[in-house]
Figure 1 (tube, rainbow, N blue to C red):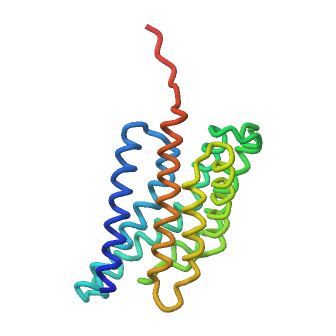
Figure 2 (cartoon, rainbow, N blue to C red):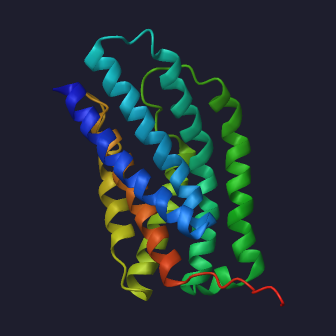
Figure 3 (cartoon, rainbow, N blue to C red):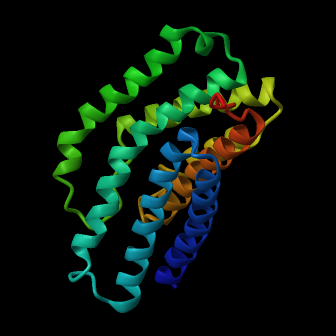
Length: 209
């Protein structure tokens, strides 16, 4: 039953990942790309873990489980690039100013540098603990979700962040609540980026004929 639940989460994550990939392929939007990467990493982590438990082959796939964990730890801070661009396109005053938008991008780089040494030592086959970096990134998305709800009447980022962040600490007996929480959070981030990429498309300059 445990492996089946994990595989169901993996299936849901893969559906969102494939859909987001097709949206990115059509738009080439960096907003989508920087949330697509952690979404894909989580889906792969769930798939490998679920198959390992189902096949009772934890040892042979241990190395494979470390790969998506590593990718997740690296790409979650980078999702702040998407957040900065989203806030600028949605019309938040601080994001329209270059230093405001740039500060979020610099924060993304600093968080990545801070996390990178530990991420490169990732060998565990269990879900990575939710770190200070994760909580900070998710808190910024939560604040953005509140702003989008009030300014753009888009409640889904806020709803996904609140629900997911409530589930994250509930992994004492089983990692399933944390996995579900992360899936809800990353899905809300991904759906939001796709929506606002469509709502505020980038108009590219046409070459002179």
